[in-house]
Image (cartoon, rainbow, N blue to C red):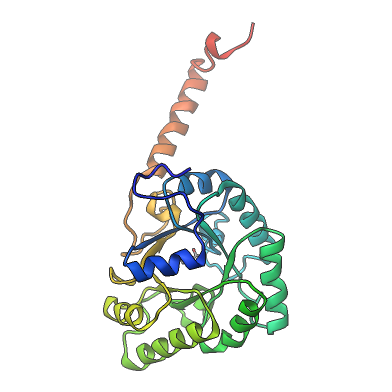
Length: 274
Ligand code: KIV
């Protein structure tokens, strides 16, 4: 049950997200990797929970998302699904689980739905993945695209800088967005691109465009939960707004516990058994 006064408790579907775009109601999306956090996010009224391959960085302690496996994603998606009643749960297809051929992509998307219970999958890329998107959508699995900065290609880009600043790349991105929509994608994440370009794409496309570092004029926003909570503090991109200082709070709590244990102040007799 949602605790947010403006929200109804209807299950969020891809159709509902489309209605939100059409009515101008912004979509609030965040990432989730486990059941406890998913339940909190769901209760707060987040519309879409992405089980992102960012799990590699903010949970597994790796430097990129490239090495996370399909088995890892299935595990985390299964946990998230258990915590959610209202939000749409989208599972990231990890690097090399959909690029080899569309048969393999279809099999892996199917595993995410059947074994982990996600309601949609996300994959990165434009025209090059459109045949795969079409095949996955054709069997009944909604697909979310991801354009702009696509972290699975970090070794090709070499940097996490803003994408599509020049006209050629911006034009290519607009064509990719059109191709993804035509292939049947229900939504597209647009990461780290100029705000004006993102606004143009959101206007041109009839499916919801969800921005991350893509300015205010997208149809919705997504952030990595550990970033916006101030839980992951190794670095902070400019587009991240920290809504809490969880790392500081947690470190303080752990230090208080250590001090109590050392001083014999924990446990008290109230926390013990006769
Ligand atoms: O994996 C992830 O968290 C993502 C978001 C950054 C959109 O793809």
